[in-house]
Image (tube, rainbow, N blue to C red; front, side, top):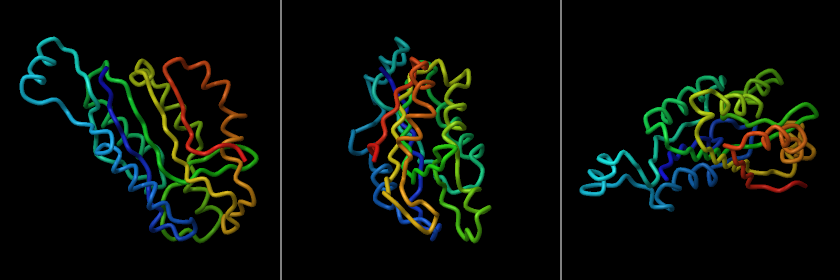
Length: 193
């Protein structure tokens, strides 16, 4: 089956409030080479076009999580997905910091000059926003593998995180909802605790 690989994230090089995620981000950008993702060429391409059946993994331009609005990031992700065949599956690899508070689980963007709690809040994207986007009509009919490489820091006091409960919050708040979506598989690179 054909699939589209979209790599999303940041190395947190400009957000000095967060520890770096350079290895995760660069590892994500190297993912297409590591899985030898490439489009078929020559006779294989002609045949797949002729029978209208694609195979292999189509790679896209990496999408940085550097803006304060998730809608802008999702727009870039969605436009990469829409460039492919409607029968393509989606491999969405997100490499950034995961963060949780008592209300939700969040993905953190790389925003420079965060100087106050409101600025930090603006860098957070609730997992519910990503999940809502994955339920959009044109996306929901595709099989989706969501890989969250959330750079699990056990604690990080500069952002008030004495213990990182990202995975626990994700499971508690979204586990049942994810199970009701047969087209979605979620893999998280860290474990609870």
